[in-house]
View 1 (tube, rainbow, N blue to C red):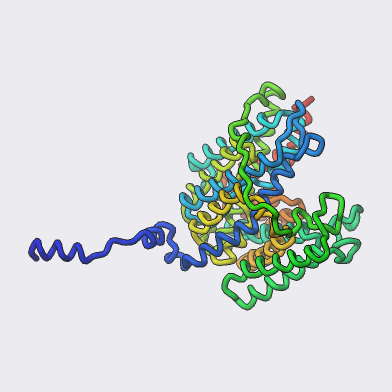
View 2 (cartoon, one colour):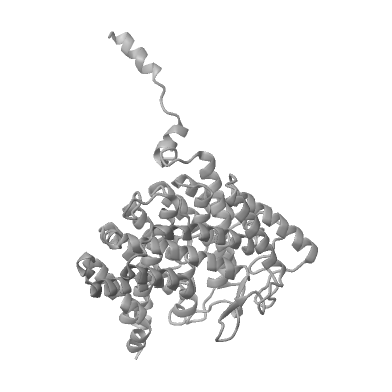
Length: 493
């Protein structure tokens, strides 16, 4: 072949365009997805997660000192500032995870940890010191992931327990949806502790909207309609806006049990609001001097255990739901995913928005078809935009997002068909894993109950040789985690 022919042949081979390169990078076609599914999935994930921009400031901050979580020296976090850093950190971490791990798992401030900070930690330290503990927790998790120890622990978990974690998370997020909607409420009595609606009856308009949304979403998903979750969420939100305009129910504000749980579906009078990012960098490591090294390390231990295993369980469940896990329950770029998840805690502490971690609501986007990190780029971009368009995030009421969570929970529970029910030494730990999660409102608690019962029951059933030594070590760690209250009391004494 002549030089001229070679040159012509080279020129005739077109270079891949940007869209093709992105397809290859995110493996969109390789995972059986499409650009449309990824964009819809990212949008649905954002819609189901957007409530965190409203809820996180209510947990961590307040509009005044008398209704905020005040720290040991009387300091408190302004609501608007927490909302801004919540959206910023969620956006940055969701995009970062999507680009590096290339998985459709959205990130935001973890509800378990932010509540722990507001209720238990700031009574002993200041808010900057509490965020310093969160940052240290994140650095420890990054170190564990970077050295491969976190991945080793992940791989040591038996597949049956990984499936049980997926099923447990399904029940957990369904229970969250039922509670957030007011469909299930506290009875205020010892027995039964919960009840249907108000005194066993559905009486509020918001809960009725939830039921309508649940039916609409259920029918659309059952009929395999494209964009079923997105269509259902948008359609139910329109119904909610119309009903609120007619009946003017208003938000509950902790006083009106028949009001909307978090935000009323009202069209905003203003759309754009400039974010206040003053909380960035407001971090201190003075907790070790204020309460002592041992007491501070016990708080860090609690944060690490909660962060570590909540994230591990959530990622396991989402990977299984997305069909990205292999026969052992592992998924692509596991080590990178675990490292970036730790960075979420570091960034959350540095911005005073609390530890950011994988959100189980990402299952809604996966249910819409998201399979790659491109969906995360969509979700993260919308979170960054939410810093400037905070009023728009309040249109979709929590009751509508709750209906989507129940549907996704049903999808995840279907994984139970892969569990081996023929041997009770498997059934019992699996059952505890599944049932403890929703009943204690904690993924980590369910995993701990499963780990401890697995190593004990399987060992005394003659299956001890099959158990990884790492699982024994983690189970022992969970024992300490479960009795941390008496240990902290002793340290305090």
